[in-house]
Image (cartoon, rainbow, N blue to C red; front, side, top):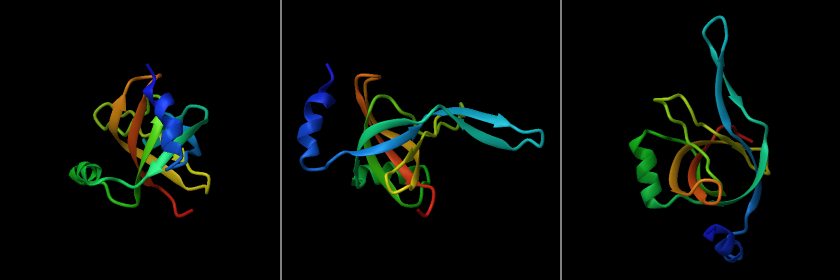
Length: 127
């Protein structure tokens, strides 16, 4: 059962969803000089609820030395933060104002395709 589809409209009356462009990381390519360039799947437009981080969220980010402007974003589906061990994750989100945010941590994950996730994202540019 997709509870997010049931409660989403109710939450939206307090915190309206915004249209976000999400790039799911597909890994990277390695150039002849050894430098790496991230690669992404085709952009997907999703609705997300952007909120301030809660104290527990900030503590999780502090534990992995994440700095900068950060937000909590609730999204439908299954998205990933950066996973250094297997060199995966690191999805990128573009906000309506053009600012680009890196998903650095999944704070909550409630299912795969029918569920939702709460991710922490850190701003990557000054837009």
